[in-house]
Image (cartoon, rainbow, N blue to C red):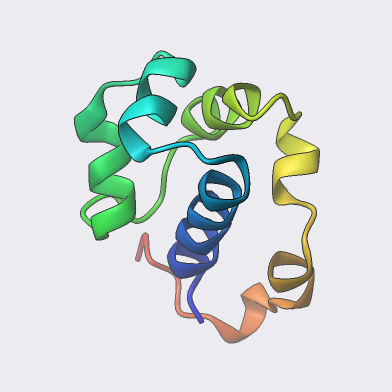
Length: 85
């Protein structure tokens, strides 16, 4: 699983657990609907930390809490191809 897929699964999981649509998440986070859609669809594969911060805040979490889950903790970035290269 890629870093992007892990982030998308985290967002989807939190939205499902809390009964929040992606549209509602955009509104709660102060982000454009297109920003959330682009992350979910894979157009934006490496969201900025400020974007993740706003998403985390919408879930009443810190960025650390948002990124602290099993799939993220198990990923080895050394084994992944850099998406920025």
